[in-house]
Image (cartoon, rainbow, N blue to C red; front, side):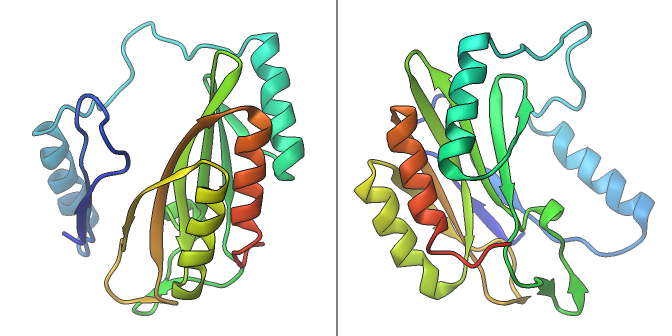
Length: 186
């Protein structure tokens, strides 16, 4: 176990996250993970017959505005716009490279809430980026909700900053863009 922590504050139901590291034979690792997930309320498969909701034309316009203002293209997951932004440097744990797709990319998610948008996700930061990013988020009405590590021996040393904000698309996008300007990204 590498970390036990929150993403948000005051969510219902209360959700905690566990980060772990495993090494060994593939089948044994998969069985251990499956057993751990079975003890949680985590669904292992989508509900039969369920399909993700598609964004409405108004939501699509809002998501395009967000992408244009942030200056990054995202992908849709149902009605959630997801941005994945890799760090500039290679990240490794001990001697193994940990690619962006394994949680080392900055993740920014947007969902419409009436005429506003909600944003959450996590910034992957080196120590010198933590306070400048928190300042930019705070200046734009976005709350830092958690700061923690995910690994023990990674290079460079990383900190994961989770956040939450709800406001106009323009204000949220300007906050995310300002925070990203303080980070070494590709």
